[in-house]
Length: 112
Image 1 (cartoon, rainbow, N blue to C red):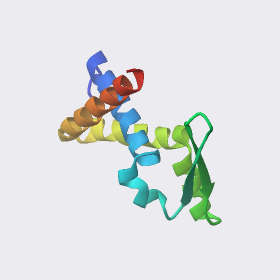
Image 2 (cartoon, rainbow, N blue to C red; image 1 turned 90 degrees about the vertical axis):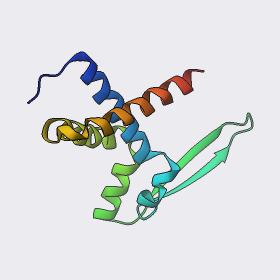
Image 3 (cartoon, one colour; image 1 turned 135 degrees about the horizontal axis):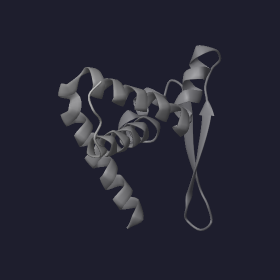
Image 4 (cartoon, helix red, strand yellow; image 1 turned 90 degrees about the horizontal axis):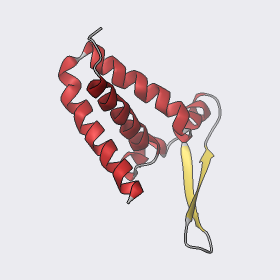
């Protein structure tokens, strides 16, 4: 395993955060979730939106739906993929860096 610097650890953490968010929430990946989940939004009186998620089916379909509806559950698998790419495919670091920069931008955006 390559030696892990603090900078690389930060890149991996942010890349994992962004990949998890991409899978669980982003519209661009809704086609991945659609066979397993029904997502609806309800507007509250103060203008906020509440996200309601219903898992479809039974068995494997429901299991995948449960995984895709859980940020924490998907996060562990996303982190495993990120670490595997980092360790076994060093050429993937540029992709990880792009995810990390997008993750950092998302964190900054939520704080502004």
